[in-house]
Length: 613
Image 1 (spheres, rainbow, N blue to C red):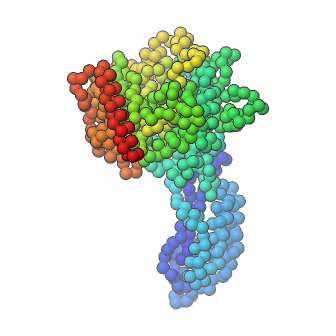
Image 2: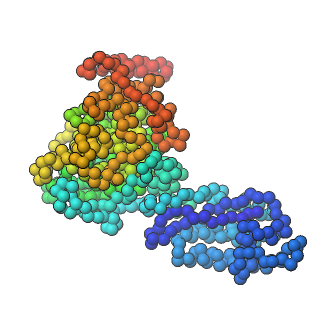
Image 3: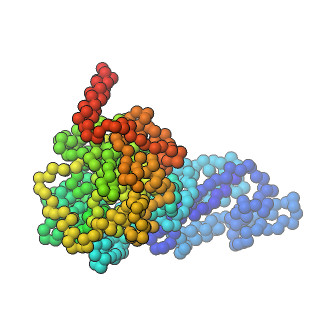
């Protein structure tokens, strides 16, 4: 009664050693008499080691008579002290010393009470903190790198590497290393593995920062990736991120700042001297802001810039992507986390095109809008698909984000493993239209599902007081003229959107990193959403089906097929195919649709007034 074991638990430490936690599991076995303690059981051998001091044998001493118990030499304290010394001073492993001392104190108490009656042992066990006894063993994933918090690349010059610039194939550029290659292992990722990705700003009682779901919502870290090209509003965006957050201490911003030296202001330069205004985010939270500067002439468009941003991720719990000219609402961090967790989908990704800033915020920074865009209007443009203007209306699903087929680059919020499993492709230079199709289909193949947020937490500056100093395509003349053509062939080839092109005609470089997963296929996506990649056609009026809160809408049809463990929607069980809900109607009947939408909104407002009354 009262035995316990030590079990190794994962976590790689700094000096290539292993840090182990101790799992205390108390066996609830029946009361044993003194005679049973002499049996050659694991319990008997463990008790022998603890009670025979200098005797290192694991076998119990022979008894002269079977009906007698060998008298044990009571020297448990010395052995317990030797064990404690080995645990705390061993060169092989780095233990959490507080946990080791706590465990050995219990060990000593139980050993000293070896001949004490059972009620007294149970009284000792009851005094052990419940939190200590609730520790469970965690599976070890040796391929996962160490996670740190707080973290800044400024203090880790070793986490950079030299690569060949994708534009000219000759220039060497130094870039951050990836935190980890994709971890999905070409299958649907397990929930246990997903829970091992994500740092917590508050360590648990044993010093762990990777706590999975046990990390409180207000302590879960957020990685914000921003790609900026000579954008004067980048600094204002960073200020907005920290100043409008309820818990800015758990946010880390990573900016890929493509600027022309001497002509543009870097994104990490404060708006005012820190001596005069130390409360500026760029002063107060400078250790949580990593700005990776890139010469503007080396820019190859948003895909390569966001690829560099993905390289700056370092194991945060959530990952967000947005533009460099954005203003956030008050308490945006707690709101967007609450929305994502409401989906109960570990593979959920909140993504949308952002609404315009005009008329969207009050003087205190709270949102004035009760509508949101949804990603559903995607059309063929030549040999590829691209997003058209997306509709905006009041949410049709209350209390949860709403499912949508597509992902948008303007805003994305997800668990951190989305950035790890679906990184931006490094070998798509000079691509602007098409990146969102690539991320959508690659993410779908890994098992991710896309939602539009129920409430907007930030807004876009579409009409700007000053135009940016330049655009990335001003560098087209520096590189090969057919660079974007070859990139588009690769993009479409990876996601099986150009079956008419032979695979030998496009590059397969690093396809194990920037390719597809095996949880789903692109063909399943095309079948489900009515897309024909051979004829380059798609079923029309998809927004009527997607932006629909009825039982016949996408959300309610798909949401019921969420896996029991929350690891995405089971499309094999779903077996759905979208067809045009209004065949024969023209797509240009926007006025009638707007009138119908406004009538619906008026009816909803009337219903709300009646409920209030």
